[in-house]
Amino acid sequence: MNAPESIELAPADPAVTVVPAGGARPAKPARPMDDAERAMRRQRSRRANFIKWLRKVHGWVGLWGAVIGLLFGTTGFLLNHRAAGPLKVSSGEPQVEQMQVALPADKLKSPVEMAHWLQRELKLDGRVGRPRREPAHPVAWGDRSTMQPEFWQVSIMGPSKNVQAEYWVGNGFVSVKVSHNAFLATLNNLHKGVGLSLGWVLFVDAFAGSLILLSLTGVLLWTELNKRRTIGVVLVLGSIGAAVVCGMM
Image 1 (cartoon, rainbow, N blue to C red):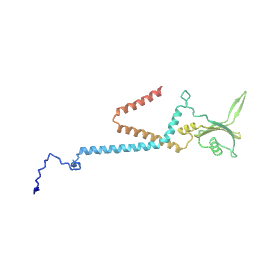
Image 2 (cartoon, one colour):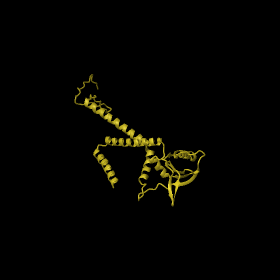
Image 3 (cartoon, rainbow, N blue to C red):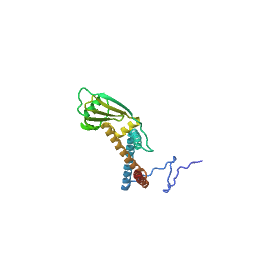
Image 4 (cartoon, helix red, strand yellow):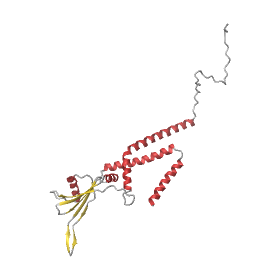
């Protein structure tokens, strides 16, 4: 059988797309974007970066305040139920000690000086409260009148214990009453900042600011990721209304 000397190929039909043996179609040439498409892509990119930043801030702030948030949530619940009634939650009874401390050799000149001396003598931590100084004055004693000596009273408050000292000028000792708080009462005092330093107050302020930031980023995330904003508005307004109604009951 003789092979033909030449093979004539039929012209290709322009309407038919030739698919290679591997099955992959040739890529279509990229169509240049117009200004509207470029602006839309830039807007989507900025929105995606904003949401990513919100998630990071929300997550890190939440992680930072998780432990202290548990403390303030627990103590907030206890403080909310401290009043007498059917929902009262007791934080424990304090243990009270009373003692008489002999005065130092150097004469005390004021209640504040007495408070600082007691802090050094008894190794007390806490903040000195507002002192009380009652001058000497005559008082009735039956059918006679006598002179009552000057009276001093100071308190030293701390999260774990409270100290109250009383002194009648002329005595050789100071009467001291120490109240050791229970564990839950100590947590409540940490919540209220009783007898704590400026550093703790600033730390609590920073935590309060983080709660505000956490709330704002949560609301922004919800509005960016959820299109049913009407439901969110109803929930917010309903929560505010319920709080107002419960507060006025």
